[in-house]
Image (cartoon, rainbow, N blue to C red; front, side, top):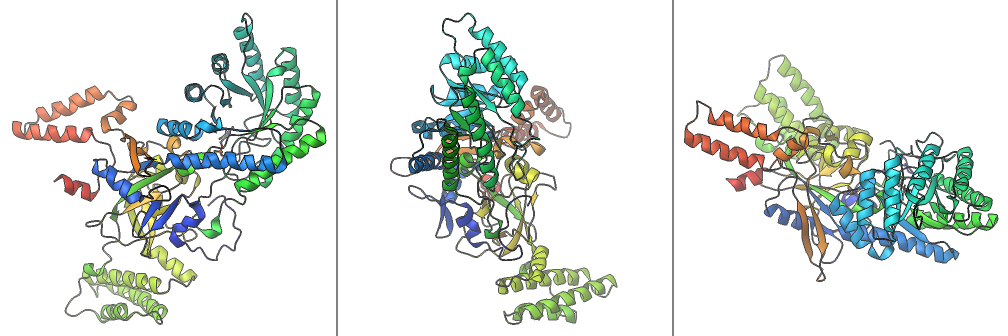
Length: 636
Ligand SMILES: *Cc1c(COP(=O)(O)O)cnc(C)c1O
């Protein structure tokens, strides 16, 4: 794990009770009976929702969106800042926008705009396509901010939005951009009866910077922002071209998933003083400080690996206090406070649910033993150790078993025992290790941890880590994982999770520092689903079509006035031909080739040809994720 703050001794207590729900869950979910349920309205279980969708015929992984959780984040953000403002008698307003780069999916954006109606909440755009989303989805009057590198066309789009009546602020990231703004302003307003321009913000290049794996956006080495010298020059340019009245926002962004609040405070002091100085210099319209994003989300399932050392309350109080303090000292008005938090708003709203297809060490069960009438003495002894294992003697028996295994493997190499004996050895030793670990579970010795690595169970899960958890692959970001049911039973299998891509990086290995335990199940007879939480920020758009697995089937889960859930806006994962079409394959030609090869085959009669074509077309119309064993059984 590259970031995160270990406030505790690393070797202590990596315990995980209830899959760390009380650490990362924020009371959004509760365990009731043996299932994990939504802690809202009728409190349905994730399992019942999943099963209902699967019964409609949607197989493979499911992405469930919960608009009520978006509403919770937005109202918490606004209420917390409102409270801080009241406490300090702060005069500026609090406003917020959602940065579209964090999630642009229509089911998400529509839900977001719907639940935020009462907050004058807007959108932040960083590209032309995102500006078009913002222009069409933000109500007139709600703020839009536009950041990032811009060309003339992109700046023109901002002017068009302003002329439509949008409350839009375009952030200057560099002096050449400002030159373009001046030029576009001329073109749009020279002959206009009522000149209208977007508001202007300036991104400042901070001396201080964030920490953490995303902390590249702030600081002097940053891709973005104006230095003090450039800032003074920008001021003169705006003045010269009569645009100073539009300059109203100072903007910075110190990086995402800010685990520690100290760098933010530093940045606020810098930005606050720049605001006050520019205002005193004559930038009268200046009236807002935009903090960008960076509010962290607690992803940790383990108490000693928490990723955030502050609360939203502390964050809001710090911002309000510092802005007030600086304004007072410099004798300027208190600015409006803007945030562009994305991760904090979006992460909790979605849950990915994926079926377990297979457990890979299922051969290590008692059922698999092939004991003979007469076994080699060491094997007989292993068998006796296994059957008489008790807590008091677990450690001793475990050592004996490991010792016997070494001897037995040597005997096999020398030709004294056969393959069946060797298989019995492997099974018995694994069973003994498993049983000992369960008996000694309260101990936390290195030896036990090492043994856990050895008996870890590999769960093959019907999803793609590249598509659905790209930050795990790219940044080693961990996401909370837990099964949807059996939560009244203690899971004992140290688990590693394999996705269905043929890429060995698509594995969430068992990590001794962040151990995950799952249940022992028989996939031939039982369903077992894993849920991956806090996947709502960044994961969806960053997701890669590695192996051509596409965005999973998604659904929006709303609650009606009776408190019951409804499954809305179901969108199935793309079918195979659509995926290929997206890559610009000539799917018409592919279709013809497939058909031709079947029809021309000399080995098939016409009945067989028809049957094969029927099957093939059924498969082509389906999504490319695997079907669970159960689904296949159902079809038969
Ligand atoms: C990425 C970004 C954000 C959002 O950051 P989060 O950490 O997701 O809150 C906000 N503002 C700007 C300018 C950004 O680039």
